[in-house]
Image 1: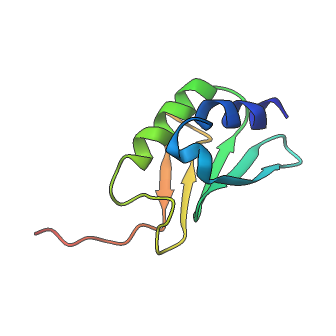
Image 2: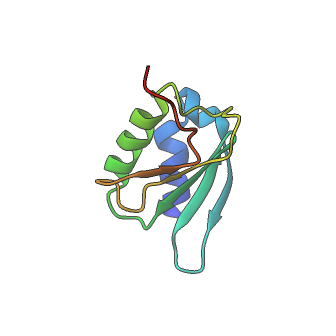
Length: 93
């Protein structure tokens, strides 16, 4: 429950905070939620501040947005090595 409150507090005044929904705590105690159309696997309570910083940084990338056309999943369970799946391949120009 604390994790869910942390997420709301961390992003409440940010544009991301307005898009947060579908908060779920799994049987393992991990947190999952959505930011618009993007599913976020927050993971366990460790490294909450780092996870918040990484999430904000990822959403500052043009390929990742709350209204992404394809289903995206951001896995922050290991915030030093976040994984984003569902991105379209972009050919080198």
